[in-house]
Amino acid sequence: MLIGVHPNDAGGIDMAVRRAAAAGATALQVFSAKPQFYNEKISVRPERAQRFRQAMAECGLSRDGCLVHAAYVLNTASPEPEKAERAALGLAKELERTEALGAFACCFHPGSAQDGDAASAIDRVGDAVARAAASVPGSARVLIENTAGAGRTMGRTPEEIAGMLRRVPAELRARAGYGLDTCHLFASGLDFTSSREAARALIDRFCDVIGEAPAFLHCNDSEGAFGSNRDRHALIGAGQVGTEPFAWLLQDARLRGVPCILETPHARETVADDDASPDPYDVDMVIRLRELAG
Image (cartoon, rainbow, N blue to C red; front, side, top):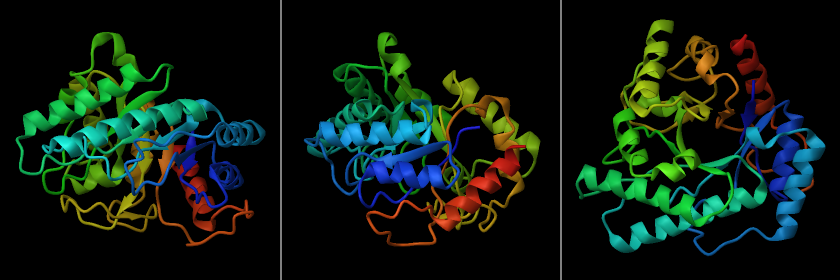
């Protein structure tokens, strides 16, 4: 099982690698740039990429378990041309930085249609994915993350994600895909918690509608209630999802071998740049997921 965390990157993303490994993780997620900005003109300095790759090798972590999370502000669904253009450029740069770091993929939130129509928003997201894949040589993938469904956010359902991926030309389709966030599923009112059969049926639905299995799983409990559309993560077993539903997902054969990344709260808000010790909550959560995976 590729069980991972998204560690604090104080001191550089190479230090995030070392903190992930110290937590017992076999996978990790990082930001390639500050997530509060578009970063459409930011590249990875060669020495920074080298330090990251070296830390990955020294810690025994593989490309297959390394995921980059795109900036939060990218709204590729926006009906405002300037914002949609900057978001598309930002997504392409995310993929470029992902390739430079040697990660297997970057994931992103599709964004909101705002006051525009949903069909056009879905097309814009898919076109941004296609544009990124066409402009960045290599094998790193762009993965759409399902959303919690607040407001006019796109990507809540498998049908919306399938519509986005249909915009990607056949010759680029292998460079695109999707992943699932458990908090988002729960908050958007998609049931995987009532029974093992419900969890299996939900994965069936995504696989059948989109035509492929998820490429990653974000393992997060939810502070908000079922169908609340609140994207607020909690420690596994400390939220509204509970513990057993994570076992149902982790034991599904279609999710074996994909990175299962925790985005749960940390015990320490700040970390010294040279402190490679793991966050205590990350240690506990990695152990918990391994137990649940069986």
